[in-house]
Each structure stands twice: as structure tokens, then as C-alpha cells.
Image 1 (cartoon, rainbow, N blue to C red):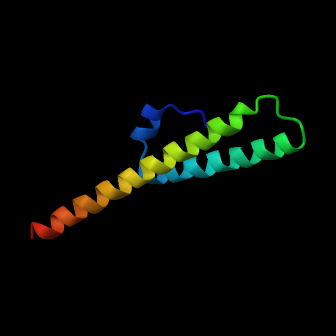
Image 2: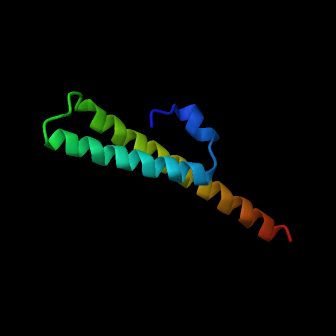
Length: 77
């Protein structure tokens, strides 16, 4: 999960969605470990939530860029 932002920006939309699913699963695991008292670094939960937000932002940016590109092609015909 611990990919840098620069690495995430280079990924395609499908790979970003896959990364999002993996990160959400990790967040779930962290919450369970915290609930059972097995989690030593509780800051990892917040870091994972931020990573999910970063990935969601990148997915949305790519969706907007694709929509603008499609709209540009439609108006130029």
C-alpha cells in the first residue's frame, strides 16, 4: 500500500481502483487489529485513511480529464 504520490499518479485508472481496494482492505484490517488491542501504531489508521483520500482524488482527476477529452472530441466534429 505504501506507494508514493508520484507512483500513484503514473498508474492507469484500473490500477488505481485496484490500489484503492487493497488500501481499503488494509484499513479494515487495521481497524480490527486496533479493536482487539493488537495494533501498536494507531497513527497507521489515519495514514491509511489519507492514502485512500489521495487515491480517490487521483481517480476523480483522471475521470474528469477523460470526460473533458471526450467533450473536446465531440465539439470538434
